[in-house]
Length: 367
Image (cartoon, rainbow, N blue to C red; front, side):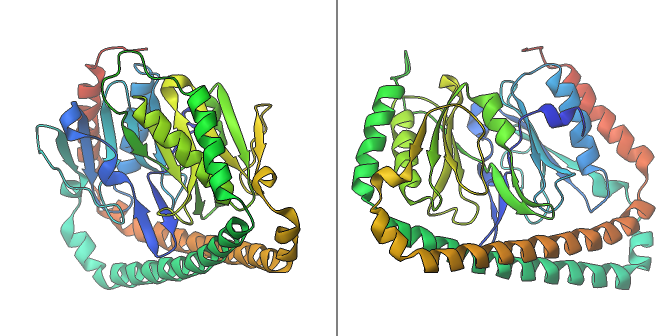
């Protein structure tokens, strides 16, 4: 993906406490004219390869293309999105199963499973089932590690919140957003919100697509907040203000508390971002920084230092362990792929790929 690596990237799912959290079901609006290719098939059947070829073609026609790597295998793709063209290709298999809502009208189903030899797969039934079980167990163990780490990180966020004036942070956020986010000219409706992740735990550790922020935003308000308590208040104010002003918003939750805390809010139409910075999420930019300490009772926070330090170190160890387990799961997945690769008729796969690319080639050039 060397050339494709220059494109913006977001995860559309996260290995989160309690299990995998998917944003795939809300990745597009069927009522808004989208053309979506849902790709089905087993491991190693060519889903990611098809998407990489489509991404290269779409990037020549559309400067709004972004990629969604797989959290279980960041070297592979889960989705390709061309916002201006309103075209998406996505992997519709577990753990982010997607089914057509309006088949033929909005979605086209690309079944690469029709290109395999079922008899060859059945001949390796016992081996495949054994590898699948091993892969599942490794993912379950990793999920338990992530859940434990998430609990510690949430505890630290709660402690920091108890030592902070969160109402003051919220008022500050409302004032800041009001100054920076004007009403969109001609807007008569609220903006649309898209949920994506800019960071996530993977077999390569915690990945943070910070370059995506640079590509989307000329201006960034950096919220320097180790625990995310104060930053969340400001991010929520920015999110609400932008939506009410008619701007489309990309909301990026924390992968470790996706239902509770925001990590970043991007407003592409204004080329403006509100982004959290901490030990793991570094932003090497000269933009304005707002430090959580301005809302925090620092002596009270220092009295909790021992607990916070324990939580941070323990969470770091747990996430490292989770990453190692995900790496083991990927190795097992690679072993499973071999059985499917041996059973595939890649001439048929290439024919299906060529048909999809042929349709994409007919799209207008919007660069």
